[in-house]
Length: 339
Ligand SMILES: [Zn+2]
Ligand SMILES: [Zn+2]
Image 1 (cartoon, rainbow, N blue to C red):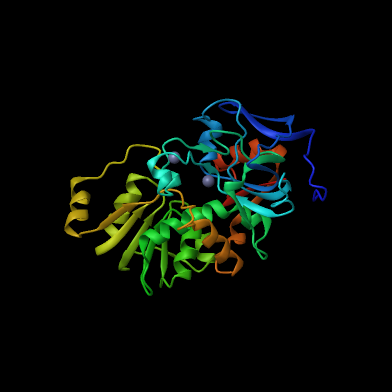
Image 2 (image 1 turned 30 degrees about the vertical axis):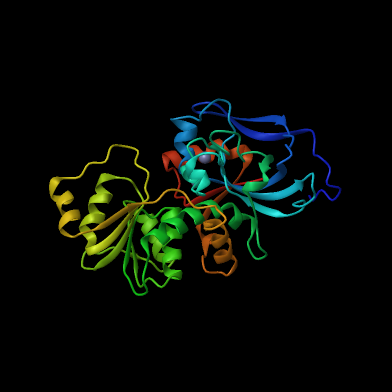
């Protein structure tokens, strides 16, 4: 468990390593050594993100082999300075260049030359990972390791809901009842939204949404704001149709295909004077930090995210879990790898 002596950890560790598209292998690797600005994190949980499915099964990573996994928590078992040793942490997975114009404005997710744990460099489908101190965020008491591993989707949802500027008593529609949509709904409720409605093609996802007190959308409802979580033309069309005149739509879903709208639907954006904007990832700066807000909200019990975990699997079963998700063999919401 805890490395009380704060000594470097050496030897080998088990990882799930992506050697080619569709070739995720369980193997042994050297435990990484830490640079001066890094600590060694013993991984506790790593979520399987929706984006990991194409990363592992169809699109691949930037180079092979790469250890996937960017939604994780763990415990620092070695920090040369001793500062973080023993602490439980979540990790912001993006490594900014700190040199580009966006980085100078703390817009790290718009960095033009970034690195990323679990896609551009090795991530947390592994027993250990060397992590830059900049990327560490300490888990407050009352936030479990599982919840810590969900800090990334919680922060993405937080960022998106802030863009929607929900006013008390408003009616919100969310298209797509996956983990981020559901977490976004929890955020919106914590900000005083009245009713929160969902559309999803999967009836079981709607049932899950209802179990958290959210509703299935019905076209008689006047919708003030929409969070579009799918990137699908049909859902964007539905969002434009549902929102009231002068309402807001925030686009969050990352499209897998080209998006097209009919002229009629496009005209609705104009006629209804819809405020349309995009959201991307999350803020992790000194001035604005979605991650710190997320952990505070979880520790205060505002976001019942634990109820989203549908599967916990061993690292050895990571590939099976990814295939299960891709083929929708079972109903799932948040799938976690437990280390
Ligand atoms: Zn993710
Ligand atoms: Zn940069």
